[in-house]
Image 1 (cartoon, rainbow, N blue to C red):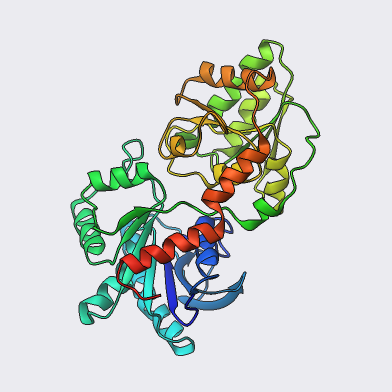
Image 2 (image 1 turned 90 degrees about the horizontal axis):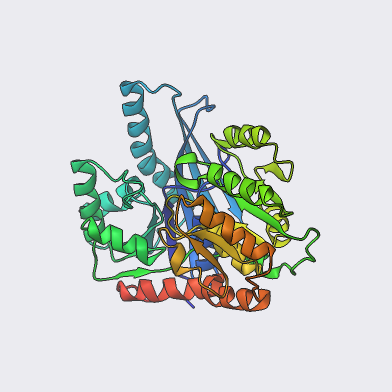
Length: 390
C-alpha cells in the first residue's frame, strides 16, 4: 500500500487532555488506516483552564502523529461568549493548520470525522483550489428521530453543501445512512463502514468467569439515551423472583450519581460501580461477564458492543439504531426499548441457560467485521471510489 500518501484526519471529536475518551472510535479509525496509508490527525478543541488564547501541541499516539490546537473556552453560556467560542474554533482551524503545515508536508487529502464544523477548513480551502479533496465519516446520532438535534436552516444548508463537495461519505451503520439520506444528505459515493475494535480486545484471551451470572454495563450514563434506570429496574425484577446475579456498571457522566443513588434506594447490593475505566481495565470488566447489557432509547453503533463481541461476550440490547445490524440469535438477545419486563426476561433466559452462546464463534464473526485491517481496506476502497489513487 502507498505509505507515501498522507491523509489528514479532521475529527470533530477526539481524545484530548480535557476528555480522554471522547471520539476514541475516530482514533481507532486513524490507527487502522495508518497501517496502510500514512495518517496525521489535526483536532481543534476548547479548554476552560487554558490561560492563553491558543495552545498547539504535537504528540504521537500509537504511531499516529496527532496535532491538537486548544483554544481558551469560556465557561459562560452568555450569547456573546458562545459567539466568541465559535469564532475561536473556526479561526483556530486555519491557525492550527498553518502551524501544522510549518512542520509537516501538505496532505494529499483530508478526512473529516463528525459533521459539520470540522469540515469548515477543507470546504473553504476547496473554494480557492479545485485540487483540494476531502472525505467524510459520520458517527453522530443527531439525524435519528429520537435524537433530533440536527436542526436549523443554515446548518442544514451548509451541511448539504459540505457533503456535495466531498469525494464521498461513510456512515457507521445502515440505520444512520438511511436517516442521513432522509435529511437530504446523499452522495454517489456513500457507503457504510463500521467502527473498529481495538486490537487489545482480540488479543485478550477469554478469562475464566469468576462469578456465574455476572453482567456488565458500559456507558456514559446519559439518562435520555442509555436508560440506566431501566436496567436497574429489570435487575430488581429478577432479584425479586429469586435469581442470583451480579452487575458491574462501568462509566461516568452527568447522570452517574443519580443511577448510584437509585441503586442504593433499591438496596441492590448485587450492583457495583467502577467509575470511568479505559483500555485494559475495560477489557478486564467485559471479558469476565456472562453478557453485556445495554438498554438504550436510541443509538448509532455502540463501540462497546463491537468490543464485547470481539471478546466473545454475548449482548443483550435494544432494537434501536444500528444495533439490530450487529446482534442476532447467535450473539445476543434483542428487546424493545423501554420494555423493562422484556429486559428482565432476557436476563432470566441467560441466568437459566435457556439461551447459550458459543464464545469462540462470536469472536470469530466479530474479527471478520470489526478488526482494524478489515476496516482499513474498506476505507482504501472508499478513497479509490472517490478518485484517489492509492
